Image 1 (cartoon, rainbow, N blue to C red):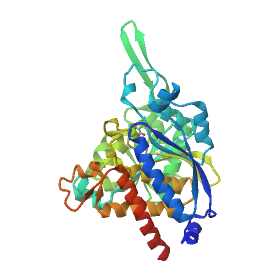
Image 2 (cartoon, rainbow, N blue to C red; image 1 turned 90 degrees about the horizontal axis):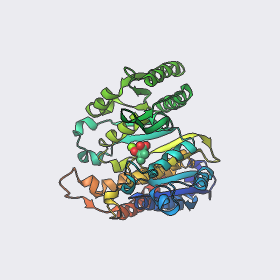
Image 3 (tube, protein in one colour; image 1 turned 135 degrees about the vertical axis):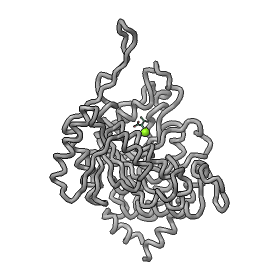
Length: 390
Ligand code: IPM
Ligand code: MG
């Protein structure tokens, strides 16, 4: 079994990957612990291993070191084969006057590692259709990939500050995009669309924003190289509506940083819970095994449910699968994890977020974070066995 698995992965047996893991704040440590157990189990089956290095980033780093991320920890993330990330954010730093905030570290990490593209796949597990507040018939055929620009736009533009003026306080944020920043993420989105249903939706606000008009122009210029891909432009407000009205209409969506942040949370409603959606952040840098990248659930640190063993670990677990595929050259193991997740959901395992909308839990198994993780580990043995004997 091991040999065939590795042949599929194209990596020599016994490879040990150097990974940094960042538990972070809130529910981060819980979901990442479950994810690590699943990755270890996959390594056991597919004959690879991990050398894990824990790094404190976020509120926990402010507590330990006084800064949300130390320089050497950014260095460790840069040197690793990939970064496996929980979540950061802590209400103790919500005070608008706070000088240091956990989120600054995540932005510095994305920028420092050159992770300009954030891939957020939105797929619907058919057994979870009832968990979505969206009518089930609208969910047929929903399978989209949101490509969010991650190191530009309002998140990074300068100046970004509050200041005193004779007329009172004012605040400014700056939305800048260079042609280069737009082109590289748009090209990647075209490439990804080419490997899927060949449809690209570019989302902007070109009726108002200059940066969006440049964005649209660059998409038009780039499409010449991808005659096989159908392109459409949508304004972000109308797109937000269509995402709920006709979600199956989308294949690949590409958009700037803030629009992508908002639309991806919206799209998670289709999947039944924010706790289901994984993400991969990648850039140009390659390692011996694949693209360097950072893998994190799209959800935040959810401080209100932290430490209670009730958070859904599946987004973190599925982020681990994306890491195996994009950064570690282990597509067979990635697929096995994805199938194991489907298997546990089919078996009725549900964390509270997935039960919320269902109302009726008959035949379902309400579980916590760690039991859900254990269930995926157990299912992994089964699906890998089936895969090997096929
Ligand atoms: C996300 C999050 C982050 C973002 C926050 C935590 C800074 O919402 O990854 O979507 O806005 O990018
Ligand atoms: Mg977000």
